[in-house]
Image 1: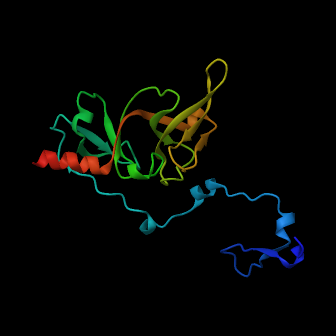
Image 2: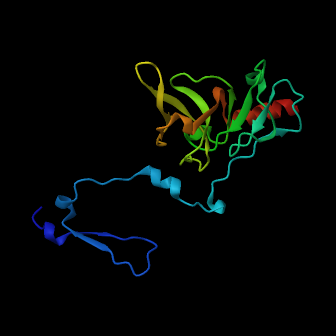
Image 3: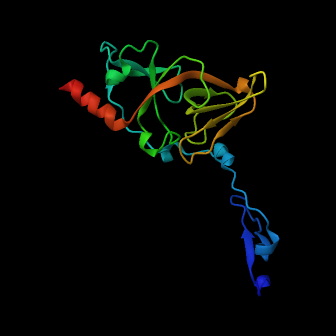
Length: 205
């Protein structure tokens, strides 16, 4: 506090040729707020080679096993990429599909596993699989995501918007126009990758 004029904050704009740094003297008293907007991650063009690989799932050749369900591509859930044995979690569940958990919205330990989901109308704080029309999930870089459904409604229960929340430090996604999100299904079960491998090992034996 006694020698504030001796301290400087330099802001450097990376990527601009011959750009001069912005010099701010005495930032402790002049700068009132700092903002780190996680939304900027959406605009980041990530090199495909730098993406974290997902663990390989134990796929089946066909869906002949009664405990198997179709596995959808997590980048494009309209595409089925195979079948996966989910044990008794898949028994007697009509119209159930699986999708791999590509991010950390359900917690770090769930990444690489799968969720099972079925077509249904979500209720407040249901886990859902959704497709985004105007943005991408900053957690995965995909327009498909698995999130908690937190709707905003008026007094007539008309849907005004949605917040897609996580179960971890992953920032929420705000949908201001309900038409910009499509609910693909409500999650009925979450399975970790180690549980899936155990099921596959039991099936092989």
